[in-house]
Image (cartoon, rainbow, N blue to C red; front, side, top):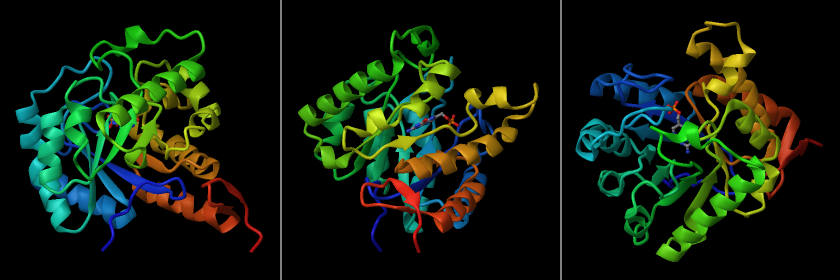
Length: 284
Ligand code: PMM
């Protein structure tokens, strides 16, 4: 079986599995290994091409987690999913955890800090065969919201992502292994995140695949009644996912895979993607 890669002509649905007690979106629900595995298998059955497994919350203000604890949380699940032939991405900012996850069968490392949080991350990944998702952030999750100061959010995020791509490439990671992610909500206000979504084409000019994670984020709360539960954000997430699919994004990181898959299938009845991944109305 070939492992799905994130490429500029693909659209991958990435299902989120947070094995953390404190993630804002699903914290505490999947801390038991049997429950976590069951949920991951459901995400896969629902149509996730990739399962993104994380053991450290990156919500604003989250305290860092010791890599040993992170690995205790995620490695058994990574191994079990890989044994099932499922493509696993691991959401980590620690090089030790990334390497341990690759040994356990992961094939993608998703670093929301773009290699900034752990200075050894990019060099550690260079000799590996994995894809590397480089996210945009300023500061650390604990303090990032105080760094949400931009004169021109789109230009600054694009240029800072470019720097991360260059750092990865200088460390020996070939650009054909790199995926970029603008990091919605990471050192960004909701308005910053919406502005980025309106200008995603300016990031696509790197020629690299683009991943976006809007699922259940605070930016969606304004669209809903006050005090709506976090799960109510799945509806605007799904609408947004369809729009992102249409605009040529290559990987959509979501909690509700079932709805996303149906939204994308519906879109595909009307729109077709060209070789650059951009959609237009189907002429079939
Ligand atoms: N967001 C979260 C965690 N990991 N990874 C990528 N590549 N992009 C994201 O936007 C992203 C991420 C935070 O959301 P969660 O707590 O619901 O997982």
